[in-house]
Image (tube, rainbow, N blue to C red; front, side, top):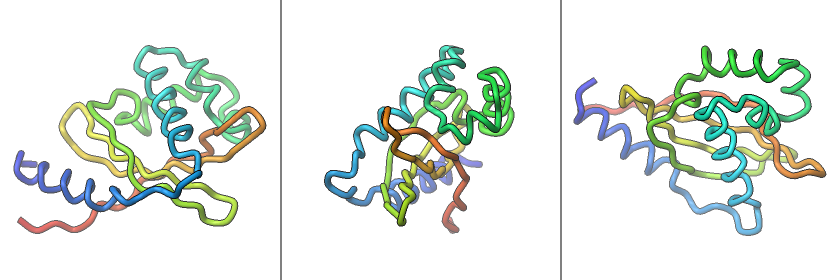
Length: 138
């Protein structure tokens, strides 16, 4: 991908997700959880990263090492991001969805949606999915 095309995609993603966030939604707390988990991946602290996962995710992967392997292989841009920014935060019934734009070490831009749940001890990550990038012509 050319630098120009990467820049255009970055700008489109930024515009797509830079919507006002709902007041009182816990946006800063949610962003802190996601940032903390990514920082834990970057330092290799899999136990700390695993603590930010919801009980369902923790049960599914059972150990921090298995969880870390899944992230390393399935979400390498989360494992070692070059840059990240936060976009729209939405509530859809019981679900709270946080959009995150991540640029990986190769300069590729990825749009992810984190599903967050609030538990007694704070926000937890209940899943991450890739969103389709918008179609861009050059």
